[in-house]
Image (cartoon, rainbow, N blue to C red; front, side, top):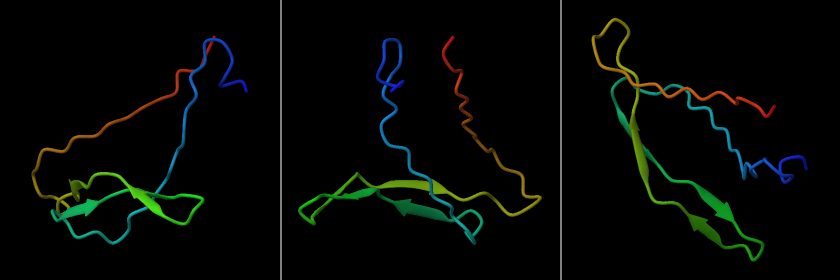
Length: 72
């Protein structure tokens, strides 16, 4: 509550990760896992992203920004 009340949607799980000291323009691969109560793991499919370019290098960058608009 209140996320389970009328008009709200359960946000599920939110995970945060900080990636430091990435090499510019390098492609990194990752997958997300979860440990079950019985000790086994389940894994997502593998994803990838390209790190930001060298400072001053011209390149197309895409950024996704999300803001919680709240409930009135």
